[in-house]
Image (cartoon, rainbow, N blue to C red; front, top):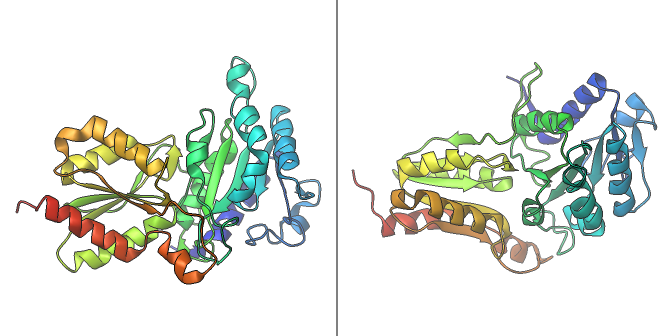
Length: 330
């Protein structure tokens, strides 16, 4: 199977969906001639023209508002918010309009809106361009939240998002765009709410999403050389969440580590920990352990930036600590 960059998988998904349905269009800042801040739209203005690749002024509220209006009239806009940090400028449109219109209309109105954005650290972009804010949208009923970690997943999930009748927060990670992964030539989609076991294991379950999936796999590979078998589960979508897949894994391993780049306070990781404890407490050999970002704004300094989020060594340390509390029975 061919291997392509994460950003190229995004571009392919957009092209396929725009060719399939003329009601799909793009709207956002710097997506025209510039091709997007991370080059996922390269060449699309020439291919589809300014009526379907709409470059906007710098106003996130206006961009999301226009996307909602278009969605309500039957279009399927893919709206870009360049950095997830800038979603703060459009939270009324996202949280009070897009997320609630279907419910408040008694189901008579749909908002088939995809909001593409990206977050996370790794580029030295400091506190206002490096946040992981998925918990805000995870908390909001009416929104679906997707966070793909691989080229295969981002293409299949983006195609599903475009066809969905609900507003979808499609959150990518800035460090994955150049990473290559296997993607088939033929068309495919990936259903929401279906987790993927990225690596099978017997001793401990690692639940991770977005860029932390990559770091967790690296940690699992190193631990395997020491005789420790880790199962790495990627939910792919946080809303809807395939909690049953996580529980099934915990029933097998008896141990769970949740890895998240976002700060721990009020996090997705904390909620997942609570849900697993409620539903699978009798299967746990030790308390659930969370490896998460520090409760601090992201520093500009590269060394401090990396220290503010989990690294491979932190995951390895957490696995060994958890196994010390609950030694394996072999």
